[in-house]
Length: 227
Length: 381
Image 1 (cartoon, rainbow over the protein chains, first blue to last red):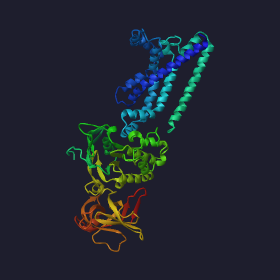
Image 2: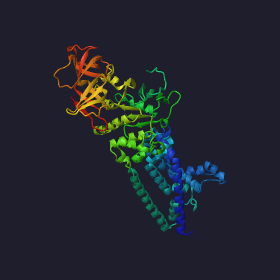
Image 3: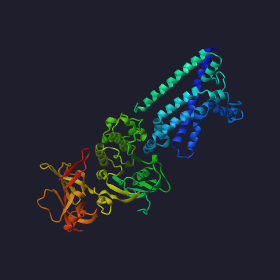
Image 4: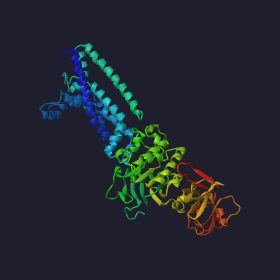
């Protein structure tokens, strides 16, 4: 494989991983954030702390336990046996699961904040206007929490693109399957291919800048009512 | 009142709620007609808003609630808020920030679009009545406080409610904005047949709007009944308060253009005010403060006071240590509308006033609640 197709493959894989992860995170994170924002249950902060663990834990610690869980004797292995595989470790599916766990707080927290900032009132108003709880959620809560969803999605996506430690632990370095951008850069540096490393690294800098700029602009636009 | 049989009377709003809300205990029951405006009045923290939230199902306490025979809550069942045909206007307009005024208005409308002409309160009628037709495409953030509250009222009305619940809709607004909205509420009152429960701690608002009054104190109901009855009941705190007054329903009978004086008929007498009150037959509401009514035992002669009404003393009660509040029935027999008069203790004893005595009530000031959107006018005679 020549350098450019190598780079292309790593970039494509990374984008695919981040997109799939972000979609799953929005699907899982929204009900979780809703529950964290609105439940009166005493153990919700316990759940919130567990969700936030990846913020504090070294990626290698997280990666180690994920490796155990995804391996042949963990639940991941049991899941993989359904389609005849032996393990989820060192597979794309395994990477998605790891990324979802790792990026969960980055998606849940902004959405939870947005739901909390909205308060009870808009939902009460919706109920007095005959909206069922589900209708109120879709017509009122989700649009009002839109900045939170955008921030969560962008952060979740960007964070997945940038992850390294966890990927290295559970994904290894299989081109086209688990060799994502950050691992590829590491690989190039190890093998003294500075030019390729530089292309990818510079690309990441541009990407990070674009993400932050886009987020600021989007939030400004969303914050302006009637826009 | 607590032992009243729990039924769902047609033509009435029946309410009974009791339970704890944090440290606050609510035990309130009342029955009022399911037409016109019923004011829920009392000091801050007396549980008015809690009653309204219970009626809406936003707060759940034990009890029952029915509107015109339709049970919304009883021992067996609790209808969630979104299954109750109500409109709720909160203290703050609480418009949906992400929707335009038009989409806010139509959020609760059946089928989310303007209803057919014959289906309840029409879109055009409501926006016309509230004067918001020029705001439809705006975002809520670009409205003034008064405009926002008008949109919130319109939004509640367009959900085709069987009961309108209003929780101090004017209290978050400044004086000028209040005066901008009150006439709209009065117009609604005249035009729409929807019964209203209206929470307020401002008696001046209720004197203009309410037909019935539920007087609340410390989580309970002191009294409920027609506005004028509650205002003039000397055993209740309203009649002996500084702001004691009665509201009278009057009908214009004549207008003397030469002197600019309108004559209005009230139950048991006639009142003259210096204002074109409308064509003969127009119903108007008057307010007469207890402090504006003095008494004479003989028909006064050579006086500039225009309104001197024969009346009979029905009861009296001390107000503070040096004043008396006297309840009058208009007319020689005292069977007409009631009036309050506050006099000094000295005058009271000097004139030898007593129950059942015939007197002449000299009315120094009459406030005419504005019709439609005109400004409030107070006539000093």
